[in-house]
Image (cartoon, rainbow, N blue to C red):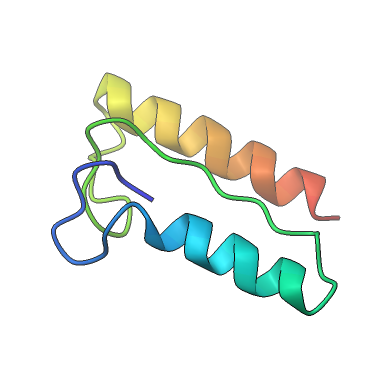
Length: 64
């Protein structure tokens, strides 16, 4: 989730977390990426892109 997302408000993440918790699913993880837009639109070659890629890979590794 980018903090500068023009399509989805940042508060949506908390709404989703609460919805999952309501049905007993606390296995919800989210990452707010500073200055990123919608759908990780940061080019990988930038510092923000490298940060996004690192945390996406870490997140996916932890899902195993």
